[in-house]
Image (cartoon, rainbow over all chains, first blue to last red; front, side, top):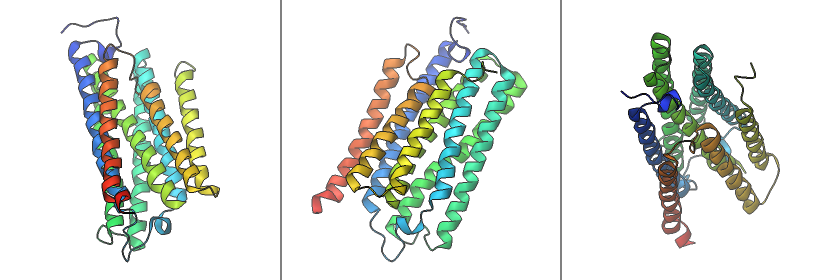
Length: 198
Length: 94
């Protein structure tokens, strides 16, 4: 393994550089995945049948909370990567833990939101609109849930092994994933919630 | 402590909070549909770009052209999927 000291730790071997590039390719595929979900949602948004419309079931307060929580968690993981590059392992781990806690809070809000939808009679089978809505939100929520578990294992490895080219690389790739989920949420926030409520 | 909070990222965070508040304004003020969509599109894409450049460090290595080509490719396919679907499922029948 050739380690290039002039590069940040997460880029220091050729394998690491390829891992990061490969993850960008995966993110490109994820953009297309969410693109198809949005396409389906925009087509079905007015097909509410006997069920409620978006304006009737969306609540602005939890949505704003979710948005600010996810934005903040994206910021804290960015600080984590910054700390990693400065070699502050402890600060980095705390930033990662904070990110994951915010992720769990976000999921709690989303679970509350889904329970609210089912409570007001908007379940997966109610109408084409609710099916498309819950599939899109659910895919994003499932990604965040997966990310929380992934992040937990990364924090565990950081505590066990400290900062090595491998753990730094994994942490950086995880930060890319987390930022990407924030980007997807921005589009959900704008074009599902806000557009649906005006 | 200031070592842990780089100016660039704090600024990026501040800007994304402001953009979110601007986007949320469409809910609190009564605006026409074209203005609403314009505000939402502009704020969402600026925020996405901000995340990409400030937080995801998309342009800092030699892989920059490959990364941007790949992201633009994904984005174009997503937009063609969305607008193509709208065109043949909704707009074509109005």
